[in-house]
Length: 293
Image 1 (cartoon, rainbow, N blue to C red):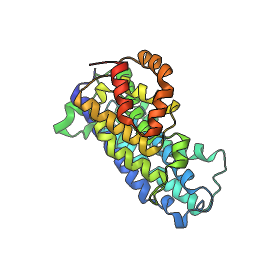
Image 2: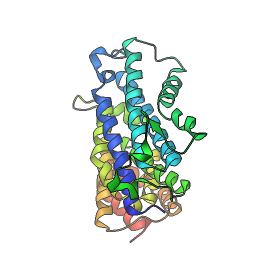
Image 3: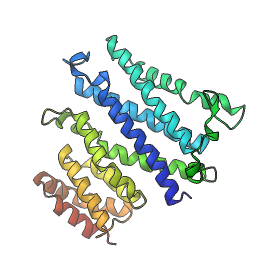
Image 4: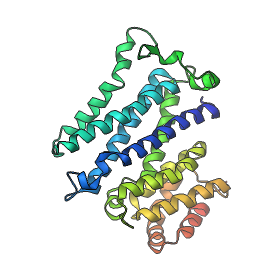
């Protein structure tokens, strides 16, 4: 099992990568509306798509390297490196006005990034357990002060896989990928991809700090999000209220089966409360019906 400090070490690496991705993404030329090939067509939708594809690449590389090496430094290095390769490739496509209608383009980008990053891990499989970058072994460059938590050789792969899955689910919930959000969330002259990133960064630390207590809640929120019509601002406000409720430890949520039974009976009333903006009523109803601490 992962210790609390080992979990936090993984989370710190992941959050740092995510912050770097978001800042690099927003500073890249693909987000420059004046230069973008799609400015008169579907700029915001295309940028959201690019944001999603990049995040999917990050998640796959992060999980793969962590399971392969069981080393947080290696995982950070390879995953963070993938950001530059992804954005550079995408910028070249935009500069050349290459049509994004190509069915193979997304696959080409993914394969390019994989070849530039994790292909080296395959090559080293038959040689040794060290990973060489620039003639130096990553495993020999572990930060000494953190080596006990950086090296996770004693942790079963399934345990690491499950923990990565929990982290990724939280991020995807905070980014709220549902199409209705994508179309209707533009306000105050901000495109929806900016609102997604801002909301994710605002709540990410709070959710990650409470990750051990959020497994059931995250599953509940996934069901809720897929079946309730909710605007982006209201969704983010609801997440804020829910995480605050968890911090205060007023009440807790039971298992997913209990929630599904409750949700099927109360979906109409919940939707009505959401439409009225009465989030406290929604949370109080859930708190009283679904479970108690």
